[in-house]
Image 1: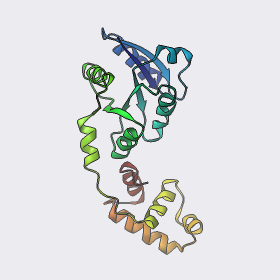
Image 2: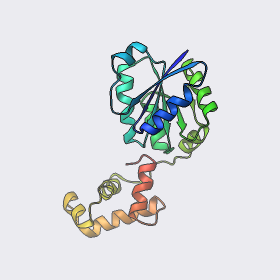
Image 3: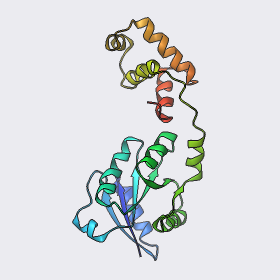
Image 4: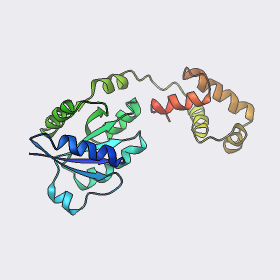
Length: 198
């Protein structure tokens, strides 16, 4: 019997995965809300696979209590955001699988069986997105401006924080927008975040 720990911020999704996977004849499942640490009961139960629902790069924090408390447990990251940055970070958190939330039950169950036997799988769509990543063309100066823009800081405040003129800030932002193939600063920030440059 494969013991599967399901971790999600969404009780609805967590309970749905719990109900779905527990129908598999060779699987036993337990649901745990994201942000909590595996308690003594879960540790004693010794799950073989942890299926962690992740919402973007910040959501990967939910994997840390699991990997710390259950070092022998195979980590599977389930995500809607199949960006290269999320995939790289998930694999960096020792995930054996990175899969889409849209995966069919039978396919997900098959992947869990595979990973419980020491296999490692990455959803092909996610792998292609990662391989398509281009090298970061932005300089550290352009990145510093984009980081502040990501926080919603206006040009005048950026200039004050970076000890530069507003004209210099605008020039760096224009270069960042052009290099990322974007139409404006918001799109440039979003693209840089998706590609893991920020």
